[in-house]
Image (cartoon, rainbow, N blue to C red; front, side, top):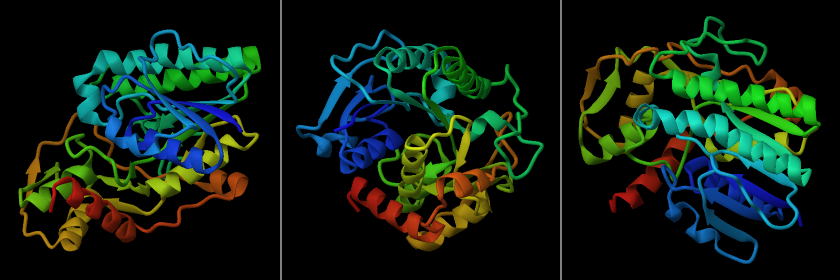
Length: 311
């Protein structure tokens, strides 16, 4: 039975990953300091093959016994989080990645870094391919997340080249689904919770900026395929179906049957104008592409939010 450590294992994406790994026959150890994660996300996983350790991964990580895989998913991951927690975001991207890589090196384990489409910044190339170096403002408010992940990628490749660690880098594009926090500031949980409560739906700018949304089941499948591959270069995992933020809001209104009005707010600084993954590499080398369309994924997510809101 493979033994796998997941940092950020109580978070939205980390918890789904823990669940998937257990189904694949792994023993899973989840680490999380619960800064943005929730125990409720992993309570149903309790069993002989799952262990949760409350731990800040910017501190030394001790795991007794063998470890086969280390997946580093610990980080604030939404604008509202990393703007509120800028130092934490930088530390977990730098020190946390260093500690997680150190664990993988010590144990001879495969290491997978959860990177992000934010390494491309406000891109001048569209769609974004893995060989694009990005257009990032390092001193802007979003720079704490963008540069933390860019540094994490550099450190991961350094451990691969200098120490021979088997490393993988996944660049994650806008994932959504059950277990997202309602108040985490990302578009889908914000729009769904506002629509279900009958509150105005807040759109930043005119809503013309585009995003590409990948349902969590597809995302986790792609991550696992990458983990089991022999690739070391970054791989985009996301859904290339692009839509504007206004189109997303209108779709959520349609699916919830809400009469919430759309209201505009000022566009945040350095907010990317476009975001769409080129997934050619994932298709060719991993045999992966998303299967869940936006309407199906949103319906599942809305049902989960209804239960959270007791509706």
